Image 1 (cartoon, rainbow, N blue to C red):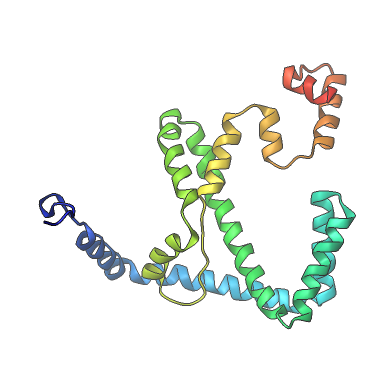
Image 2 (image 1 turned 90 degrees about the vertical axis):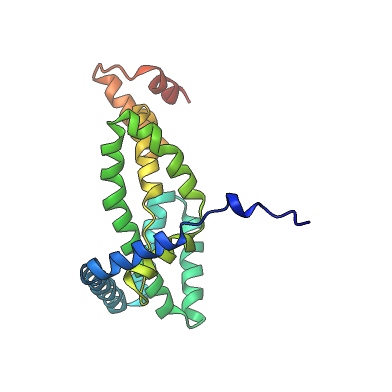
Length: 216
């Protein structure tokens, strides 16, 4: 006697999904290919721009950005040294290709995710319904998003977008206090305390979170 799941209770919607994908490709294949070609041109142009830059200029820019973000000289030096090690191993061209992919993908995610998150934040019902979905989508591995992209756009250089994190963080920032929003936007504690002290000097009410941050 088989202990398998009863056949009468099983169902599959694979055929419906396959028909939907075939319909999209047949009716909108040219438009999807046009979008793919434009993204490819953007990606190749950015790769060529990165290749024009001397290697030491790129290392200097990365070091300056790392210092601006962390205000730590040690972290900036370590990051520059690790990037230089990639070049010493003969992988500099692969590094530039990966960097171009990351820059284009991140830019597209921000352009799509942040405005959509701001739009949804003004609709409480949509926010409550979408937040669990976004939380689940963020836990899925990257290749889950890669499969439909390959089916619709074909093989080649793939710009992978995962705007779920951008939408999720924007919803959280828009729904929180001004202090929480400032921290989520990357404002350092030093800059935050300076702005709060300046606002209090001008007679503005910084609220309880602001007073706690100033006393920290």
